[in-house]
Length: 239
Image (cartoon, rainbow, N blue to C red; front, side, top):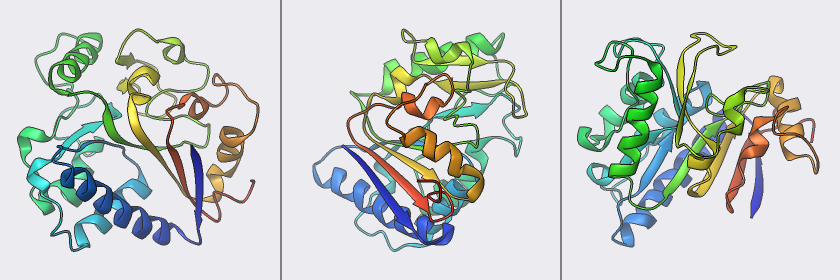
């Protein structure tokens, strides 16, 4: 099922997604399961994390939620360029998530000999610690239609036998990144796309069109059964 939710403003998207996210985590825990959530980076994602942290969430045991990442910039662990730093500052450290359940992607100043080895290490972490499928994957969409660090025309779009890939020439700096593949991202009960701003309107239109190419618009490669597009009116303006 694909659902498109249009909210008047980016602030409204942040509030609506935050409320739904807290509710979704609470409902999974009510089933006596540990939720597994894949986080993303970006402006609207960080606004959502701040909104979640500001909500009353007594129904959620934040110490029993597993957090993963859809992609990461391969830079030193203390770099503010990393997606995990903003999420930690805005959400994870605020609500008291168990650090052992925060599965960050490798950093450039760690022990891995190269980027390929670092990507492989995260795939092994997934195989070892992920039980079943992700409950929820959060994804931004770039103006070019990319998701995670899967960019238009890149060979990583064709990888279907790995959970992670190394990216060495990202069109957005920094050039080196680690990304989950479509195989991993589509191993989810739900995917939520988080998209705001008129600059994303064309990408949203192409992603949701009846026909189109994954090579041109990678967001079309997300095919898990339950997909929700959270858009502000600007991002939805070309639909």
